[in-house]
Length: 581
Image (cartoon, rainbow, N blue to C red; front, side, top):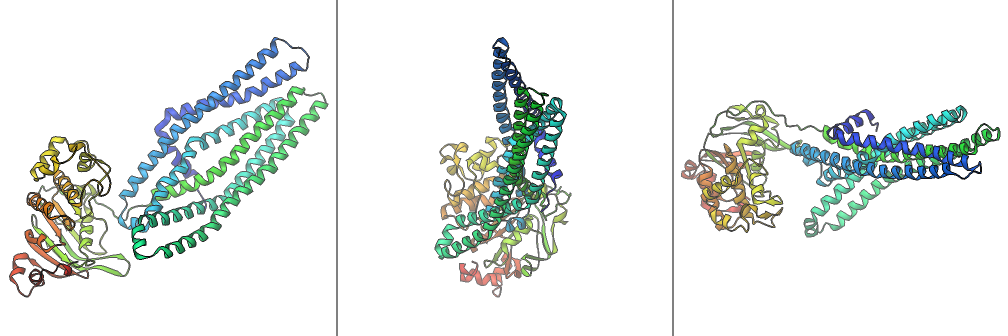
């Protein structure tokens, strides 16, 4: 897999631009640190040349103190570079995580069906964590090492053209070899990163399904799959590790050649009397200085392989576009919505029809009750209205406008979708109700709670709106979670409410509260009720009965109740809940 480094640079710059001051400060301190490293060998040469004159005096003392002082400041600068680099990296990687999560949330459901939660966690957290080193030290170290390399070679040229030329050729050759080895092996690291994502995706999915695996006795199957995936990724990881060994071997050979060049050249010049013993040490010291950036570049190259693979995977995720495209039209009328399905077909998987030629209409302010067995397509209708998916054939109209022409903001603002599983966040009751919006005051929230008849529930909260809730069902029962969901809806004031079996898991006491709240909630609003209980449909104006993705019966509820031949009439007479579920 060929990786475009130019795209990497754009990606990196994008997340560093917001920290111009810190990045500039980091560069300045790094340059000062390089200066310290280049000055100290000069002080050492002066010290040695003075010492060979067999004159111990003030100059040697000053040189020694200067050496210690420069070394001290070099350490201080190194600590500052590390500290600032960490701060820059934390902000950059956290910004990437936020952008990546927001991007994934905005993608359609087909994307989330294709990608396991464990895989997405590995990309959002694992791959981005790999980029932490890229922002904190790899980039600045690469820059420092290149500048140190160039600065050292310039000084060596000033000392002696032959030595400068020889070590320049050595450095160019070393970088060329190491860079080409890196380029040829980078694809292996991309494959290794993808293999890790697949592995951790499987682990995450298995852990989250522990109860189902245990109850169905599928432990042996899961372990066999674990071994299969392990066998599959082992040669990929092994090959990626072998590329590191190739780099290490190449580095060892190159550095040995550099040491030979340095000693041979400097000893030859010393015997000729062209340089002093201090200069011999200077050349040797600078040769070691050359080795350090080249060796660090080798290490950085290995880190770049891993980080480069992560950049590719993160960039690929950013490049994924939602199949759902929104229009530019608004629902300007401040009235209940009118919904119309015209010859709608839909498939989750190619060749498997879930809805077949479905047509119906919900007038403004009316309540439509939808009945059907599990898998008949009831929930799919709701998902199409909120545009989790798009229809395969046909069209959906809202206020006589094609749903694809309406903006996302308008649909979100005007349509509320409540399921039996209410999402509770680890936050206060206030934040769970307002969905973290800061422009809704407490008085408004409490008024809605009282208007809906939930005063007793509210007064039972240990700390009012500041009561802390935990994700899942740890803090609230299923019924209490539905009460909270109703408060959310009332605050939003949508024009269409979809209740997808919202009361199927609540106790009778909570159901009475919700039934009373529904009377207020449905005033001046259109509503679609996907029913789990026949009694839930008592307030429906019209009934729609689905079977195997087709409408088998539809009409006014009262008319169907009066028609003894209707399926709805027979369901009511039998009262058989299992017919629906």
